[in-house]
Image (tube, helix red, strand yellow):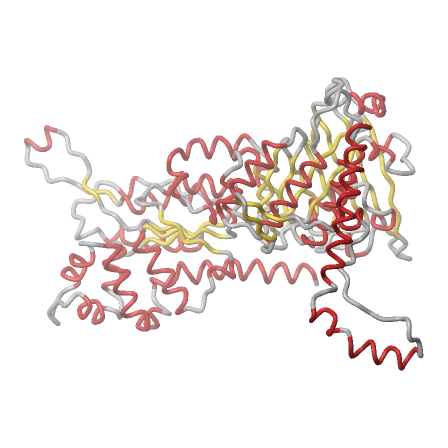
Length: 606
């Protein structure tokens, strides 16, 4: 069995959200979007380690953006199997609440009085969501004895945990000994005790050990007026059990041992200890069902180890695993239909496609090999700025610094589609509810001619393919569709476009920019050559002073990525000239989108 769905209403930053889960689920999203709050909602219903006082609602637990006085957390369990090695314990204890479809629902309901502010809560359990509140509320979470959640947080004190857990491991191993083994251990422990006493005696023969205590022993005698008492250094481990329980965990490489120092290694040992404790060999009868929630397990691990960790956690446990992460490496190891992308909007925090979804899987599948060229950080972004090539990526990252637009702080990623194939990129990021800004070239291409036209010497005609591409992007991203594309075809001369077409395309540009789509005047190189950086470009490419824009563009296009990188390195200070240019508009739009959402967020909380 596993949690297949969580519905949260009026809780913290969730106004109303439906979140579908799989047996292995990964929750991603920016900071403060509600990943930890989602986990805490599950903990309220299922974590038996939470005290009764922790279940009592506080004012800060109610939805933050609007005045609300009720919260609901409804957890749906599916695929409950009547099998001794699986879920029979649930059937035997909670069977009357399990539906014929093998489903179970549990709800936490909390409220506060509008006048006095008094708060209270209760729980419901039923075989269907409709019947939850038709049943009598239950006094306590008695079901957590058989169905519960184990929670692990990344902000744990690793060394104290290891110190505590190693004693438990030793004690567990002791309890599993048979009589013969216990008798043998008793003999060995006696030998250890004798050797410890010998070590203590030898230690006190060391001259600096004896002399180190002389001064304060003399003062102690003056203070206590006692000739017989003295203080000396001692190994402190004559008690064999205490000595064994204080053993250190070390890493062993061949014959050499190394003390555990780094948090990375400690984190790995923590997780393996935790897994050993919580995932023993499957017994003949499972006495309780556990669901594991782990927040940011990648703490202190470098990327390769993070990928190993993701595989380990998903493969090691037969039970449901729910992870939250900020790690692109861990995200890459999860199936797309098991990813829950949380995002924030005017309706509070929501899950893209309501959480785990085959729609996301299908979109990824359609993306095919191109998925490998997307930096994994993009899936964690609040906004993606899509451009055609690497030159634009380099240029806009450099320009962002001049504009004092912190891409990292705003959670913006600039991504090249390596051509004009924007559609598949837009499909995947729009389904993940990532905001999108696009910049594309204003390509004009020759239309295909029939053989008869060629034979008759009819001149070829052109189409404004850049505008057609922008219209298609606009129609995917926005509800206001543009349908009139015919005007953009059959242009007689690409260098002399009719006035009515110029008027129409000017109107289109205004619509595009309003909808976060930016069409260049011609292409990236030509647009840059037409800016106030013309002199710098001529100097960088060592061209004659009288060189035309055509000369500059031809030189720029020889080795696009390398050329623009070197130019930006040498003339980055000159980019300040572009602050108010059309070239800067896409970046300022990115900032404006996120700034406006931030302002709206603040206003709704007033």
